[in-house]
Length: 317
Ligand code: FAD
Image (cartoon, rainbow, N blue to C red; front, side):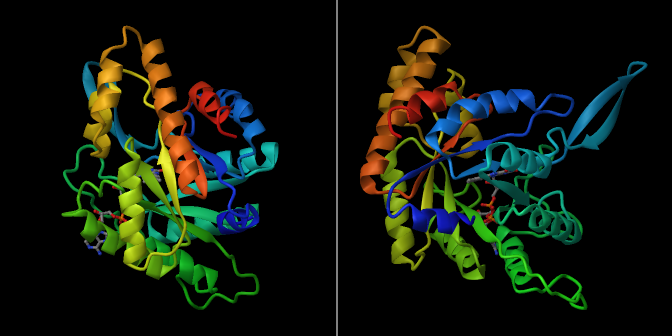
């Protein structure tokens, strides 16, 4: 079922969902299941599965390093199919511009359609670590808007090669990313929202936000979005802080601010167990306020481990 249909059927009740990351190449899917199992009791209508960009790995041969390009966490679509089958929930593959040609994206979408996967999250992806700025893959898209356009056209039966005879059109529900604290490359929140509006006008059906730790940022973002005519659901993404290093890592990677009160609490902890607990309690308070605001879904970034997400969800759902 489409995300938008799940929201309609919920009749204003806030739903629970989460995002998972495929295991590293060579690892078993069982660990993923072990982390999904405890969350199923909260009835997630859908689970997002991320896609990783390709990266360089260095292989040492007789003292010399050989550089190879590979995707270390492949299998997004396989995992989507496995989880959909095992838990009977909808799964949402993240589809990237970076690392894929338009043709490869089309094949992926055709596979999704065959598998009965009718939601996709359309994203640009980040620059590769050796690149200063995002560089589109040869034959691929530059911005998420272009990817949304491709998916939207496919929904109308238009393939890249328009000669294709179509008797069974897909009908993808398209999610896109939104940034309550603006995207790192954007000159201002207003400019970034104008870009978000372009994704919506191209056919996006809902937005999932980047993580934030101060709900005021989300409230302001939603207000500004609505004023600009963005009327689709805006699902907040929440990540419980879990380790000391997150104090540096999260602002560095995601260009987000952490509230002073949270920093103070984390700095007052003497172990990562205590920090994990602070992260859980912060996320519970955040979630309760977002519930009162009437958000359509509380969407959690699980980053592989689910004990903290379970602790949060058990207080709310
Ligand atoms: P876009 O919407 O294309 O925007 C990128 C930047 O370009 C923005 O600054 C925007 O303002 C600007 N821009 C857009 N259009 C134009 C234009 N025409 N001209 C000039 N500037 C323009 N990354 C992964 O690799 N894998 C994942 O699975 C993944 N999942 C994510 C899930 C969520 C909910 C979120 C919020 C992010 C996720 N990301 C993921 C990260 C995402 O790929 C990066 O944040 C990326 O840098 C931007 O992606 P986007 O889709 O927002 O890009």
